[in-house]
Length: 131
Image (cartoon, rainbow, N blue to C red; front, side, top):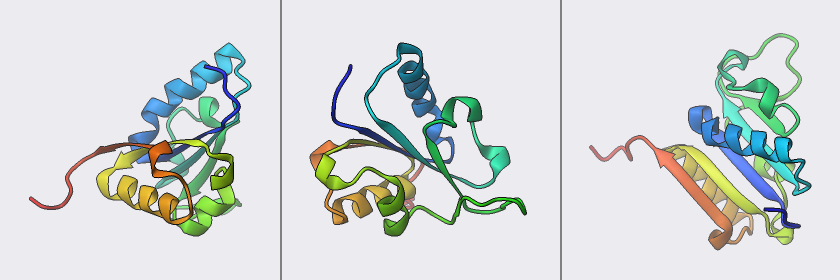
């Protein structure tokens, strides 16, 4: 539903899949709720649904960058979060989706930066490394 609080999406790899649907719905309904996506992927070839994501997304490439690439590189860390996400003082609703280690690291960095942990929803997949 419409809201004045922004929505921040943060995805790692195929964790962007649920956000594709959310962003498509946002676009199709003409929603005015501010939305941003910070998306970490290995290469440009790995980007899922680029046409849907383009107006919302900031990409960071972690493995291979084309010679002409002028965007972000490297894993999502505190500095990247500070540059490309809504600040904590606007109390965004934050959704994080990705592999377990990614999702937990991002959530920890968000809380460390001052985001309210009650406003962060995490969807993780894969093992925790304990097996």
